[in-house]
Amino acid sequence: MNYKTDVCIVGAGPGGALLAYLLAKQNVSVILIERHQKIAKAFRGEHLNEEGEAILKKHGLFSKVEELGMLAMESLEYWENGKLLKKIQPDPKVGHLGIHVPQAHLLQVLIEEAKQYPNFTLLTNTKVVDLLVNEQNNIYGVKALNEGKELSIECGLTVGADGRYSTVRKKAGIEVSKRKHGYDLLWARIPAPPGWEPSIKMALIDGFQLSLFTQAKGYVQIGWNIEEGSFPELRKQPFTPFIDKLIMAFPILEQSVKENIQSWNDFVLLDVHSNFSENWGGNGVAFVGDAVHTMTPTGAFGLNSAMKDADCLAQIITPEEINKLDLINCETERKREIERLQAIQIEKEQSFATQFVIYS
Image (cartoon, rainbow, N blue to C red; front, side, top):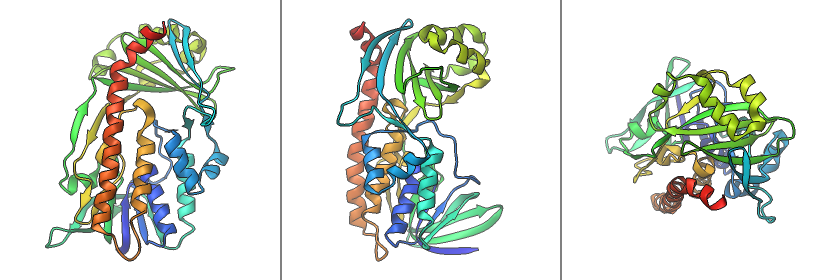
């Protein structure tokens, strides 16, 4: 089975799906590939900041996502030993300190909008296994397996939007510099207790950050930093003393925690690292999001940065041509921004504990 298209995008996360919609709207023929069967993947970095919000509003998408459900954060709080130290309110001009948007809602809107255009094709349950490369070493598409059947997609530009372990990046021979940050992250989600306000709450436990993010539909997401590589040993220890620290930090959560977090299996481990590639494309390939600049969870920049990449890339692609100089200029602009944001993440991580000294 063979396809031909202007652009083939690998990965139907927010960056890839947004790019596919924008290109389809511009009359660029586009095929979007997703290795999962359904476009409803669970994801934990689901907070929009002002920039992500502005991109969705720019393209008339924000209200459509809002109709499905989202939740604006009304405060950022710092807690110590069960007591509130500091409460930060949003700038009235902005009106929030981030917006929780379930990824399923965001992707549903992007895919449904893209499907309005006949030049858009979505291939799910499709896994890229290799790139198509000509004698001049230019990439002109991908080889993939769709429900076990081989297929090839020829295109003018292949976009790797397939995350931190990008197959497209690896097959293109593009290297990334990987940086560990000294911690890993345990995720858990519990129902919010009665009267819980939409907020982000921070605490310090054993020198590591504990974060609570209010989610739409009445949930609280827990993000607990632990020492890098420590989880295998941690799992061998009794569970109760560990979870007691969470309850001590936020006593109001005691009932929900005890009912919903009953073993180490109720946590999901995230291997925290950031990476950055000096090469974001060329020779028929380009990248967006985690494929070339994985972010840590700090500051919730990842989702928004991927959408900014997509917005920048969409502005320079036309049905007639894909100008190499425009690609380089887009890449240069986005690289500078990502380097700035990754520096901010490092500074925030290193100075987190000092905030409690200041506020107390």
